[in-house]
Image 1 (cartoon, rainbow, N blue to C red):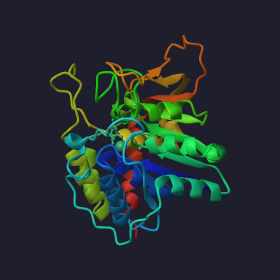
Image 2 (cartoon, protein in one colour; image 1 turned 90 degrees about the vertical axis):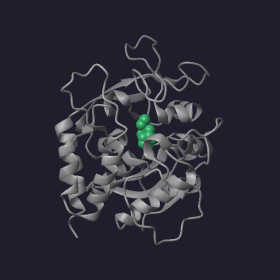
Image 3 (tube, rainbow, N blue to C red; image 1 turned 45 degrees about the vertical axis):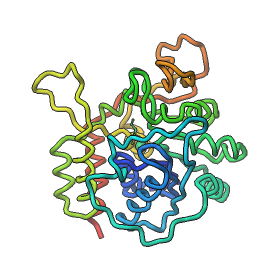
Image 4 (cartoon, rainbow, N blue to C red; image 1 turned 180 degrees about the vertical axis):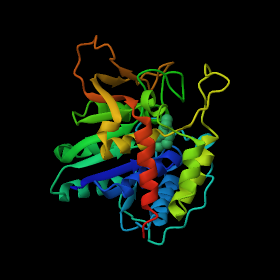
Length: 318
Ligand code: RIB
Ligand code: CA
């Protein structure tokens, strides 16, 4: 099967970790580089976490570069309450054995795209700061971007404020740069990621696979499940799974048929106030503006869970 080249820009982060491991396991993805963003934790921690995850998977051959230290204009907000002090609390990961790259994320992105003989898919699972900086500093390389598949935003609602999702809220100006870039975009907001759930039996299955990667991922999922918030209207016997936000953006690249999507106009509210960081999705197409983003609204959950199973099982093969 032809492999598509992918670069993951992430802020690991428990769900980022699964997105990364799914990319490594996919037989139709060639993960050529990883860049890290500041979001779930401070930049040096998400950078270290990405390197530890690649060490865990035996893939330190993949270059990892640290991105911007903070959002374009605003102070950095981190999600220590969700991902813990390390950003990957709840599991023990091996230390990287390779020296950290001194190269910046922007330079690694530029070098990788410039030297590629085919367009590369960018998957972004943290704030879009690195994506914005790259798009502004290398407009000549836009044609080498196949698409940007990102976890962020919501057509309806939010999780860091009532109207904004964390990744967009951390750097709304960067998100607006990406929305205006003209690059093909696929958005995996809370509308779909809150439906992409893994349950206790899934975590047990993963844990019982017996390979060290799956064991760590199961431990990370158990920790991440502690911060999952069940919908307040759910009935007393409702069981809410753990929300797999970032894996949606990667699963779409592996198998786009898992998702129901619609092209819509999306822009970002960058004004301070109640709706700062809101992804304003023209759901009813009343604006007449260009439909710049493929927005995901639904997921085939049984097949999504099956893809996660298959991804984790692949690490059992030596
Ligand atoms: O709102 C969910 C997003 O915020 C995910 O990317 C998660 O990793 C956190 O960064
Ligand atoms: Ca993330």
